Image (cartoon, rainbow, N blue to C red):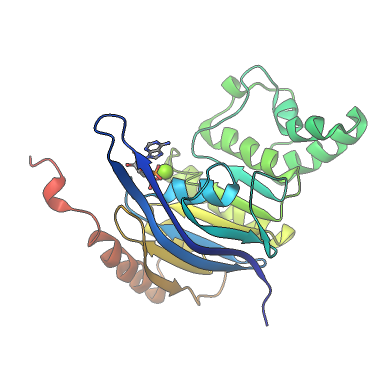
Length: 261
Ligand SMILES: Nc1ncnc2c1ncn2[C@@H]1O[C@H](COP(=O)(O)OP(=O)(O)O)[C@@H](O)[C@H]1O
Ligand SMILES: [Mg+2]
């Protein structure tokens, strides 16, 4: 039997709106499990509660109800078991690539030689050797996101939590980074929870795709992506799955709320 790495049990969350003081339900009784080494994608419409779910798993936010277990232990706070990669390139602008990647190692108190050795390994893994001494403003969006991935990997987290990490990139760069991420996943055998609103990306990357409802987020449907790796976007099964998932998602996007033109 497969080992379960992450277990999300019946989590719910509301935010209280400061204007009228009414609670806004954002996550409604969400449960799912992620196997060790699995690549799980979660898709949902904009504003449905995706980031909130990921922040609860990361321990950055508390749920009103329910619990998250990693390796059977309840998540109470952030820990080095979980590495987080956000959509925004949350790099320190005053630090070089290498110093950005070394951040978590400094925090752990590792000596400089060891930090350098480890950071160089991950800088190379994300294809940025030669850019160690560059500053974020000297890098393209894709390169910045590579740095963010390396920075999450240096702490050797078991679980990588990725919140629309390629959302701000152009389509071509996005596709290249998807392949890079799959390569890293194969090499490191991390468990990945990857949030996106892009169905094509989810079908390309995931072993499984969860579709969320509109806010408050519930699990609407689960799709197993039983396609062999080195997937081809033009493959007929790929196209059919993409359509099936997109149809589910489109039902959750309220067309009437879009501005008419
Ligand atoms: N800290 C917060 N305080 C109040 N409302 C929030 C907070 N975080 C998120 N929300 C609200 O919760 C809803 C879902 O947000 P989020 O989880 O970021 O959605 P998604 O990532 O799917 O776009 C949004 O309506 C957002 O405005
Ligand atoms: Mg979000």
